[in-house]
Image (cartoon, rainbow over all chains, first blue to last red; front, side, top):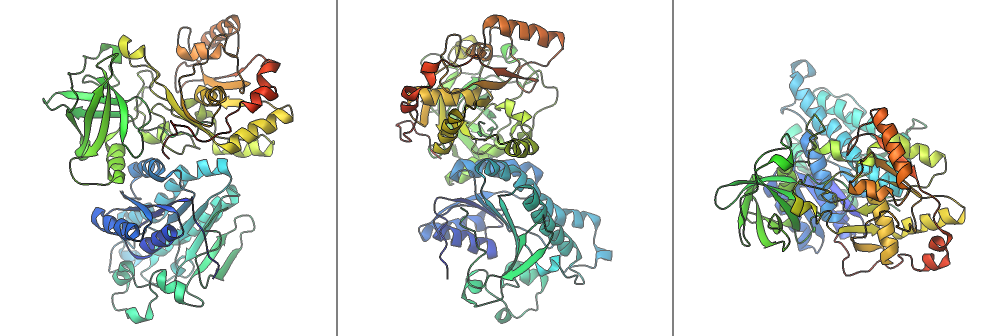
Length: 251
Length: 325
């Protein structure tokens, strides 16, 4: 496994209090990054920060909602004050909308709007606030956590799938505009997380990967990523068997 | 370009004696120590000229001023020159880490407002597109002219863009005793890559354009100090021999302001007076958030840019006043 080094990088992970976000935060901190976790729930956030610090990593928790317009520049400013301008940004926070997940015919417009605010507009706003200084440095990595619901249409996954399809295209469009900053949309596969349990309560956890830790142990298949390639428009799916996508230690 | 983000520096609070007060952060907050110099103002908001606001209630060292969201500013010391400038340390009224204090500061703070700007400025209104660490308490607002499109266009034309970070502090309050000591000495950081970009420009006969007076102050302050990071009280003005900066993009400022004096390091008084008259005739908007001038300086003297000056350049990153990340 190619060892990655994120030393001397500042990283920001949304949805960082649990599940994949927490594990990505841990993984970045283990590789030397100064990590800021963002999540709504202050207590869970505090526990995630404590876990990273217990391993000797540097972590800070900012309790904000990425779907709140007022929060975006507060997150960006406070994060930069704490660890410097983030050069690695993981857009991991997302919402399914109401659960059990309704048919689109039964989805309230306000619920669709909220899903888009958190899963699409929030990452858009936060990228706007964080990409500019990286453009001066001509470096940086934005990772959007995607889903196969972005590509395939499943009954009852409409609001979520729409938001993730748009988020994938947001990543591609940003990549087309802001070279050499890198934008990746990654589908981590099905994992044993609180969100998965909310979506599919009957799923057998034994069939699910553990977030990140599980993916690392597997030899193939769990992580597939889209290298956002706006210019060619191609969607290059590939698997990242033993580590997260190349380039997480941005050069 | 000065990549300092603008911190929402205006904080409404209540003294231990129950009196309303405004704290206005005057310089960058030291990140880990959560310590800052603040100007103290009486009750009121930006719709009242600061000159016309009542004086602040008295505070003393040890006082805990309560701000929004459980944020507390503890007065560490009063400035010897005026009791309206205080050193405070920010904290929470409950256990919490540094990040919690920063989150509370960002929730409680409002951007400094200007009486001449009709709509209240939101936090996103006072950020340049390339803003990073929140070192500024007033927006380095010449950067408003720079959009993402501008950065790409400059790159296409072979113009190198480099950044400095300069903690643009409060420029004035409207109180004579405070204004006499403003701006306070300001933190700056000029990274090695920026210094190399300046050297490359020199080699090919290029010129250095500062986006905003704060970027000019960072570069000239660094050159004068002979180091890349530190605190500078170097003010540019008439007779200043510039070592680095050939031109500055700046707001339109009238005679008698410190901004206008700074421009006299670039152009003689009569040129600036004529430009000002022209600006008034064309109804340009003055002050922060108004229209802009690009002021090309008279050529720097050879002696200022020769090998001697380069050797004195700020190559050393270490300094006692090096700011926290």
